[in-house]
Length: 161
Image 1 (cartoon, rainbow, N blue to C red):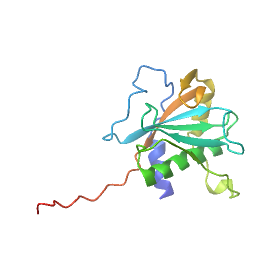
Image 2: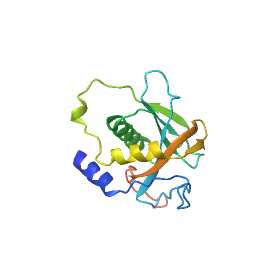
Image 3: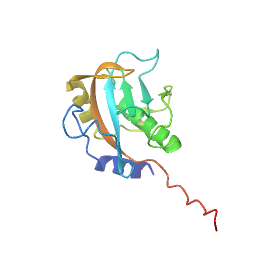
C-alpha cells in the first residue's frame, strides 16, 4: 500500500510559485483527482514542533503545512504523510478550521524514507518570494498537488423505494 501511495505521489508534478497566474489560488474542484496543499517556512511554531498542518474551509489555501525554516526532507515527508492521514479521516476539504500538530516519534526514520521529490520542494520553498498567508504571516511558500484521499461513500438508499 505504501508503494501505491509513493507511486501516486511520484506521478504528480510539484507546482512551484504560488504567485503565478496559473490559477494557483483558485479553489480546487471536488471533481479533480488532485488537491492542493501549500508548504510554507515559518519560525512561528509551537514549542517542540517541527511542523503543523493548518486547515481552513474559508481560505483559498485550505491546507497549509507550516515547517520550521531549517526543516529537512524527512520532516517535510512526515508533514505530508500527516496531511494525507488527516484527509483520509476527515476528507480532502476541511469542514472546520483547525491546526493539527503531530508529536515527534522516536521511530527509525529509515523505516519511512523521504519522498524522492521532496528535495526539489524544499529548494523551491527556500527560493520562493514571501507572501502573506492569514494566521501564518509573511512566509516563503509553494503549492503542491496531492492525490485525493476521500473514500467513495456508499450510495444512499432512495427513501421513496
